[in-house]
Length: 296
Picture (cartoon, one colour):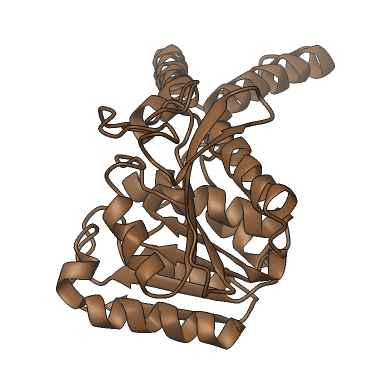
């Protein structure tokens, strides 16, 4: 778009000069080259505009990769099953793994290629570590209705938070939002807008588009986590594999630098995006336990 604005303004200036002086302006480029230059600029502007429009309308389809549904979700088959209604009318499938001995409830947001079925072992691990755990599926995932979108994840986590604080009467200061990968987007959104006891981000990004291109090339973003991180007023824990090939470790370093709340970054040395538990599960669990102990 910038190319078009420049080309248009140059044309206006030339026209204005002719009207004021009544003479031909001094040629900046030879007459034969000028049409070629403007055609090239117009072509570049058209390519950029087409690319920006494509990303604007189709980015959600590239970000979200819901797996085939592989779990049942009725109280008769799963006593942890919960159904919520988001503000946009979508039904949100959720699970509540209650630990009666815990004061802390972890509100878990999963990655872009997971659902409540595939993350169940992770939820049970956190419950067995001593915490109550509440997790939900994004619209279009598992048994949640609707289509996966950035805004849909925000409305889903808002519905989950409302259920915890209103229906279950859980105090906000005892809720820790936990976002894994793309789940860091809605988790940070919630922490920037609602009171929480803490925020944990595992293998998440500064912004989605920076995962593909390390510098900004578009006038809009998806999940601008780094722009929201300085608005949270609860303690922050970042966990990231140093060899992450999906979302580089540098994203957590950027988030750490931008955050103003009490903050820490725990590197899992040698871990990629999805193998943190296998590479160094001890450091992973100890960092969470130490973080939550500090909150209590």
